[in-house]
Length: 95
Image 1 (tube, one colour):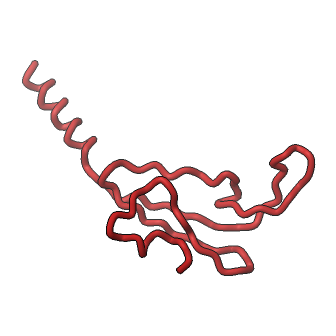
Image 2 (tube, rainbow, N blue to C red; image 1 turned 30 degrees about the horizontal axis):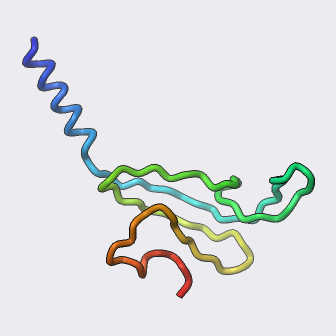
């Protein structure tokens, strides 16, 4: 019985550490928001939300970010909070 519990625990631990691909879809759009409680203003949001929804990843995961630009002007995506070691060209900031 103890042997079966240890095997089950080991299998669960191996599954937790496996990297995966996380698919995320964003629709960048103009919103009308009332952030100060007094007046409606134009803002840019994602999937109808501001602030934009967070993306949760684990170390080793790969993100597949699908972006649809519903704005009337070109845009780019720029990330904060992730290291771009040797890949600064993928940072998203305009060049």
